[in-house]
Image 1 (cartoon, rainbow, N blue to C red):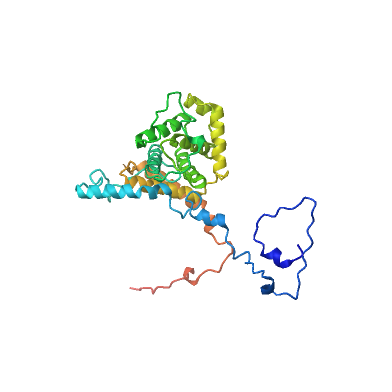
Image 2: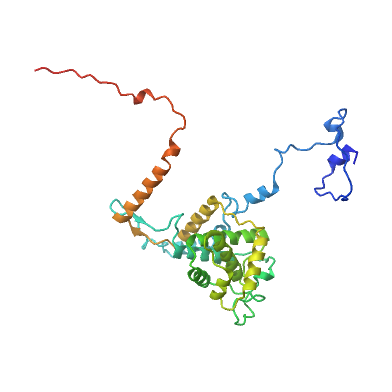
Length: 341
């Protein structure tokens, strides 16, 4: 321990010591230079945190990383557009509405108040692309999410349950049933998708026909508790899914949290990114949000909201220090020649 060279060169991050052993105090030798000792350590500002580097590639943590569901849907979207181009069928041009000088078409979905029905449809579509375009080599399948080991109903699981991909409508019905029975909000659906992709990234697993229901159930269970002030209890889900037990729900929630490394934080920038990527997914798959002409009452409401926000942030735009007025703002008396007739 007295050798400064061996102490500084050692790269082991963990040092197992005896509980009763004591380290000698370090006394630098002024006669030895930095090159002689071999202690060429980087400054703390030059070091890079490995967790931060990995976080930049994780879409559920970093706002600049592309969402996984949107990248997995690109192949199918290109094939659909190519097929429509070959068959000379423009994608949804006849039913699309455009604004004009006299009529403005708007949908009732915003980033702060998304449309519940179409948000659930978009989330179901994103889960569908996750399952369809999963890794062909296959990843690890955790037992807690295996529907054969932990069935959601007493009906017998088919022997080929893990071979056939579910349709988008089947995923939508499953998610819609849970949201309708538990009275969850559209924002909870977006947070559910964030937790789902965070689980796939952290645990390095794929969502497949054998585990998609329990993964979605765990994500909804966790999102409802984090987002809603009056969260749904685990026993309430047992009333929705009659054949599941409270112990199974508790174990599902516990292992889901452990796989997320207890990271349940969803920044506003990440939430907004998932919302707009879901809108892009809907637009690419002709699942546009319903458009309605802007009425007089709604225009007054939008104007009132805009005025409220303007008044709210008016004080923030004011300079804190009183500045001298510009010469352009000075009002001087202007003389005009009198006309005497």
